Image (cartoon, rainbow, N blue to C red):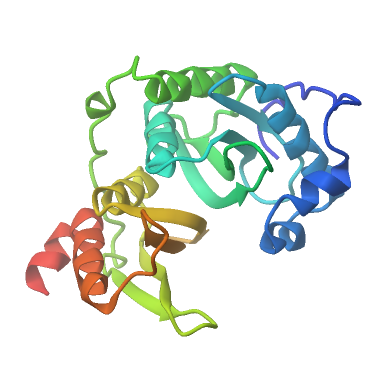
Length: 256
């Protein structure tokens, strides 16, 4: 893991046990993270208390600095986190989003990111504790409305040569519903913000997501439902696909 680790708070006796925390997370989370990472995520959740958001590092062998971002789940949260990352000039290498169910409390988003500085600006600089503190301040400012979301703007699209083709499609889940949106496109700065903002504008709810970068290509999966929890109907699929394609690759959308 690059960069300097942020000191992680210890888990108090009043906090849930590690087993309870892991059981409150989806099965996919328990398969993807070992005890060391899970313990760090639990401590970051506990440190949030009444704060709008908590951010900390966790141990990971994947490239980049591994961050866990915790906040109350809400529509558009992934877009808001992505905007904070753009404000902080941090580039997303990989990302995974999870929803933590808590009895008697609002659902909690536990989103994990592997980040680096924007390669076009600070390609070799480590992500420091000061950078992460600035990211947290930016995110809380956006969540509390103290930072104007429109001031973030959309990052300029930089198409990598030979990777401009974008594919946006729905795939069926085990129940036969078209619930997972797949996006494959060329890597560029601010891509996750463009994707998350397009889905938020379509008034859908992201219940899980996975972002992976392979060389100059990005492979993203979003499990989505309508805001009321209803599955995405066939009549909505095309509308969402066009909106996402237009946001990510306007030139291809015009030629389609």
